Length: 387
Image (tube, rainbow, N blue to C red):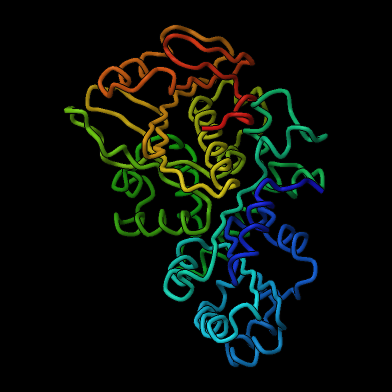
């Protein structure tokens, strides 16, 4: 079993807080993680209809029945249960311990913020990271393999065909999660919407344009984007809020939590197909940004991730705001570094007076260098990067 990097932070928090909440995409390994690190806890999965109905119909009796230490999996199925957990925790304090998991982010977080504020530590578990796979038999030499295959654990643990499994994952997601959240009358239109989102990886979100392409209203597309974000399929990167006296773009950019899903939706099945595909650069960018996000999640950091672009076309792919320091990143899929790759970094550092030593060019090669324009790091060196 591959050790998950988030383990120590979850265990550390469990010694201080009565409730631990782990969210993340379906099949990201949440159940496996909590069962491994809390083996003495009773395990209850609310995907089980009988247990779910028990929790809905008699929440007090359910909590009394599950025991003093319990893992409640897929708790989003009974959101009202969180209010009863709050009362129980307040009444018994250190005598009760809960570990909650859920695969719906925003809905679960709304309930958590209302019911368990100050009583829970919240963790986001994404699929495997580069660091988790680095020293295993599953590690690849070429980043293209990671982009196409993605990082969902079952693909690796069971040696599955990535494209087939990911397409099944998408179909299951549409049939189950989306139908639970909205009345989906036209699955084909939603599938087309998913494919358009994949083709626009790394691009600024234009709801009206997407709506025109699929024949849906602006409000429908806005709702569907929200559903994809809620279910950890996509995330959006906000534009950086400082304008440095220049007109800046204010709409978010769209990315997938797993590039394998984006590739499956675009029918990219091999390195040969990826290498000639128009989206290769955007997928490499997506791959790097998500790896940086995983590092933050696994270290229980709450980093602020942005992109920056002004009306003249000057752009930074990723800005990580650590409060006192800003770290700009540019991503290039090329295996050779070229001087023109530093254009965006140079421009941003000049107008923002940001030191080049805090700038990073992540590329598809292997080298790690400190240059006068910034730090050059091959994609494998993301594992050891600490900012």
